[in-house]
Length: 371
Image (cartoon, rainbow, N blue to C red; front, top):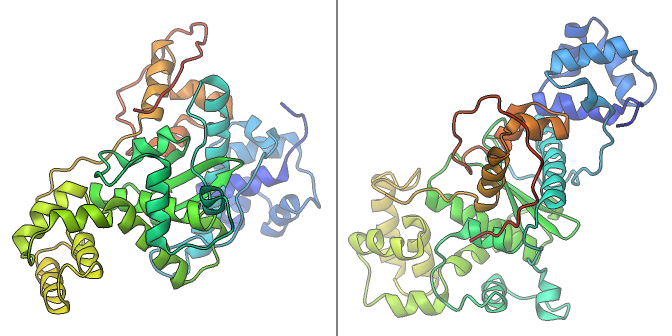
């Protein structure tokens, strides 16, 4: 650990805790401009003040001496709605992404996790050709040997291809999902406060960004690329050949509610996909959309028994950690954060058991395989 205070860590800590410079200054007994000068390398805080930062921000002192390896780019976070809080949420997302990168690096250094295998479009085609989203989704399915069969578990499929999936369900509920590449490793954040069907679509949407655009953090904000990612997700989860081969005649509401279980998608998504493939008429699509909206399907999936997908990778990591008599606390100490910070990254992706202090054992190097 370095003996030098890292100013970027103070900004990162404030973003994670969503604390303004004014609030932190009042808490530690300095002025807001003083905090700004520290973060902009114009002042160096005393060891005593660094301890006050740690207390106010609920982080270990060592957090502020840890070099920052990487921060994702600043552009193209996608929010549910524009608000005055958007900038704060963006800063929080970037800082939590840096923490997720550190956790990913620890996992890869400690375990034999699957190698990254989520290609970009030019690698998939071995050319710089631009493909429509439908064809890009078909090309990725072909590269992964998926054929046209429904995908049983989207999250674990991506983990088997070396992606790291984390939760944005703690302080980041204003953001739906986002993705980026850390070196060759795809990293995806999900807002887990959604139906299982919508979580699967969000995963496929971010894969669309990763394949076609390099990740949603590298995408210029705009409806066109967002629509392309939506089209990719729809085609990837509901392949044209399988949809056309599974639907006979016109659709009624009852048919949508039964068929959506095949592809594990939302009723609204299946209605839209059927319309765009020409399976149903404009009138039928509009009628079904109104019926589904009236029944509550615009906000969720009433009556669905589909369980949210869990992370095989993170579950295996935590199982191994606990087998050594350790807990989140031990991972947090490695990263110089609090146990709750690690838990928040896994929120909704791993089923947590009640933990207590335990005896330490010699670490093992597990061979993790997402199944």
